[in-house]
Length: 118
Image (tube, rainbow, N blue to C red; front, side, top):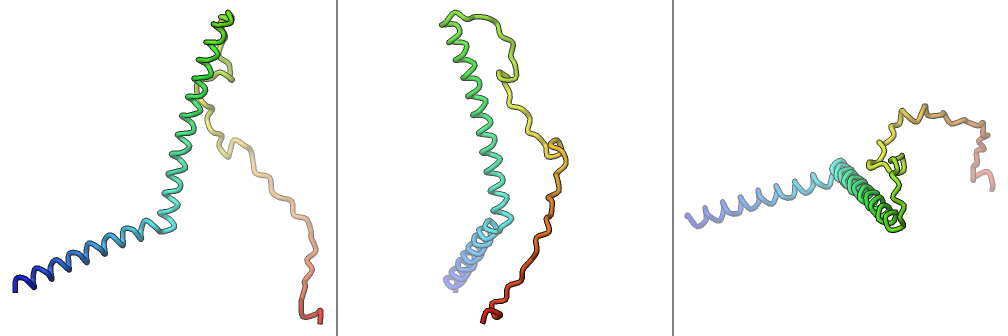
């Protein structure tokens, strides 16, 4: 009797566990979830690219200073837009101005009925 009760309980627990796992995986594969995962990956990649660009820029400034020192060109240079330490802020859609409306040309539509050929 206890043996049957044990196996019944173990089977029920395994079924609940498997059902929970399957439902969780199905929720991860919904279009909304996949879109959110893709957006998160894109944002993460953007941050990594920005960090890489800042590292490259810092390396360029350092190497430029080394070359100027080696060539004896130690003139103080004020940092301009090309030597800025940070990347510019991203432009917003509103800053680009209003979106022009596409011009619609009157293109005559010709209906084609394949049955008229015979």
